[in-house]
Image (cartoon, rainbow, N blue to C red; front, top):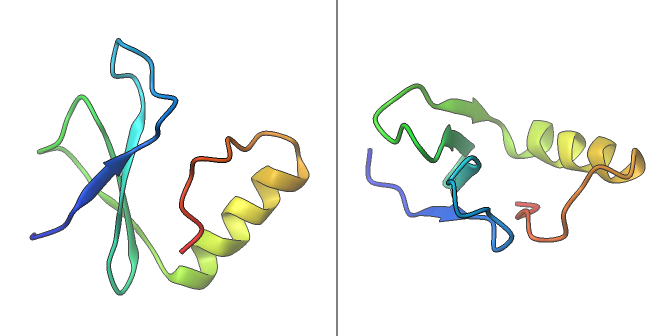
Length: 66
């Protein structure tokens, strides 16, 4: 999978965060296990997920919306 993975600008030094790749769909993986499983979301599902986090006050501004 040829994807450009991005990590949050507020990631901690332990690397305990997720990375996101923006393709036709949104891909998400654990930064400490780049060869591990990848979650895939449609752009609409990702937008809905980020919107729900934002409404709940749980969102860091550094996550890509789409």
